[in-house]
Image 1: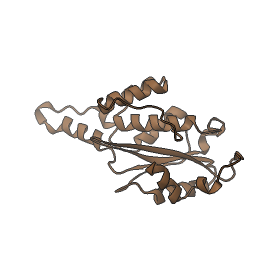
Image 2: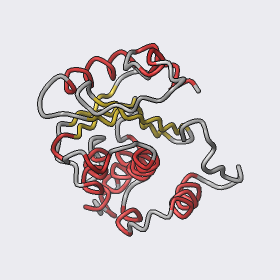
Image 3: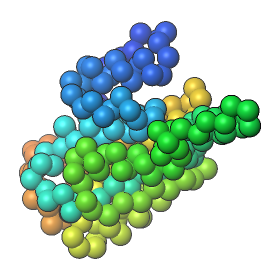
Image 4: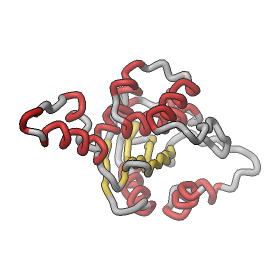
Length: 200
């Protein structure tokens, strides 16, 4: 989190145990978390930690915050669980609590509900992490009123393959901090910098 290790699992726990331990470490206190599927838990935790380090986030009107996420597995984890529940005609039991998570943009919905965000949103499914896609679409929103701030990134979960990378970008009208020694080029919203952050 901003180049600082916030939490490290013990290496032996499964993903649900890891996410629960991270939830506890983050002191989130959001009971709805436990009803979510794993992809949503991952996205909510990643965005929560990023938001906590974003200066001025709470002052931005909620309709001026956009959410742009992507992955390559869509909602495959929940899709498999749902498919298994309806594949046996003798034990046919589709669960509404699973079915609601069979669209990947539910991750955006859960983040929006948690933070009362009502701005623009989009979820893209692409073959691999695409910094240019995130940069171009997010920039379109940032140049369109009323978007002032965007949360963008990659939240992907498919079996043992798990990744979450989210970042915040503000438009040019947002009050900027003038921090001595900061190289502005390193903080420009372009595909090169996004790819660099993702690769850290």
